[in-house]
Image 1 (cartoon, rainbow, N blue to C red):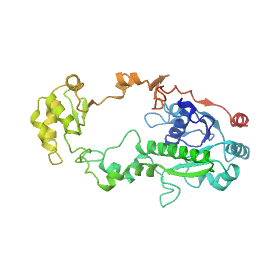
Image 2: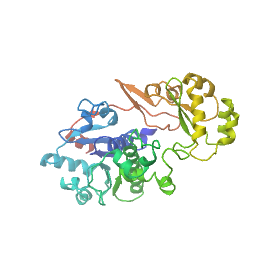
Image 3: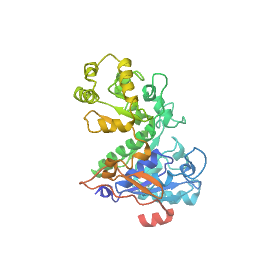
Image 4: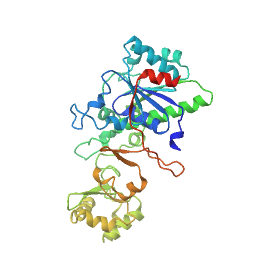
Length: 362
């Protein structure tokens, strides 16, 4: 079962907002015991409302489901000792402070190694632990901007903000992958490790193709310049995506919509402005329901652009059973089946105290 993968692994989570907590939730889904250590003021995400103002966040309990939360003031001598006790018994420490902060709190790398030579310490930061940007403030859009992806995402007139936050999720996944690799190496007789993972470089690692051959924004094969990889508006103001890259799928589409003359035009020079205009005019003439009925069963890589409210009730989504609703919060479970079994629902966030955790870990 999925929850057996990391059973017995103890994780301390000193991170806040999205990237670190998302990473440790994945570790928790795989069976790790995650203790989230928060300062007296708590994780700022707890008070981030959906409108960006201070309020009750619907995201905090979702992103920290399956974990136990304790409050410690690492500037206090007593709590400092308690945290040291937790570190000495942990397998993994994930933190998202700016470089140097944890050392100023008395838990630099030398101290951590002295407390626990087997500890895998993952420092998840914006730009990494070294370099001229190491202390520069940023958020997801900053990292997407710096790594080039934003320059080619959008229309020819302007880049478009990506959603959900790409670098935050890329960094979380990179942190988990690297932690799992370090755990595997340690189990084979290795020692602990210090892992320097940055959100910007995690996303940078996705940019090899773009760096090699940058596609023009709004005009490349898969950046808006091709009729066969495009988004089209329907008569009722909905949208559909079309992506028949393979000639056989493009031919299926052209024949299904009674425009066989388009088949030979698939690879006209980019941007295919004239062909895009023709296909767009066709889609704009009928509502989404028409295109669903006509193209829903055709092998042509057609898909309606679903609104969020439609996603949980989609037949395929329902059949896979990963979308879960509880107390008005809609969440997605770990996206993997193990031995044909779907993931179990997450336990709710548990609030406890650090002394209890130390006693349990003893």
